[in-house]
Image (cartoon, rainbow, N blue to C red; front, side):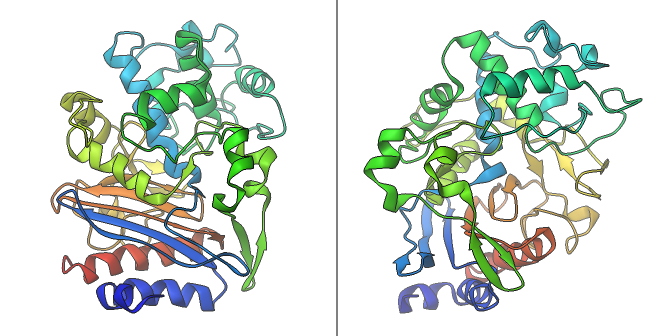
Length: 370
């Protein structure tokens, strides 16, 4: 940890160092910008023993990448190729499991579809197998869309990816790359790493560890067979600064750093407003508000208990998304602040939520925004 970073972000560095000493992670990437000016872009710790984690390491963001897929969906809505209230079965005719005829694109984006829990088989099963399995499973027993809300980590996002592929003809990873990542200049980020990129720069692939009882054990997410397979809700990876650039685009009302209008301002407002409000989420076991593919600050339901929140000081209209036990990206419109961070250790939801609640809060404190 450099003296300059420690001096500028003493509380943030303390939280990171505490996590390293407790075996919660071996390294963390942090990016923050205020008024579209970077104020933090650093990495602390190791990617692997004897290999430092750098700000350029391509880290796995897991579900923190969901808003990127949601943005691609909303671009298709803007073009008139999709409608939010359009039934999914119109786009995927084999989506005929019990109760599926009433599920809409809006239900998928707001986690109100009520799909039956199944194991998708990612990354070992082929895409077509995963889609067929989800399409046949249907809803939970005695459920109708919206009767029970529950965060869906993967199934709805495979459906959204399949819908985009069928409308467009390109593979989902290519759609995400060309429609979102390249215009936002996220050129070191991919939904699925091209095999030649993985082979050419394996040292830039971020490793992820499962933390248990203070010990870190690497999982398979950094392997070639995992990294080159797309999952629209969980496989985005890149330097965390590039996730920050994505939130800067949303904070600019859809305008990229190059001045191009990626999304209309009214589309950004729809995505980031409370579409689903004051509803208990059976997956999170907590009340959480959602926009379209984004979480809207839910501190009103318990700042010290809300899962995957944005810290104690985030303003009411902050929006973003976390990744399972590992990452966060969000924008705070009132402060014109963007924060993105990822830790390479997955210690379980409770320890992670406490760790990142402290981390996000520390960033506000170090920037004088608490």
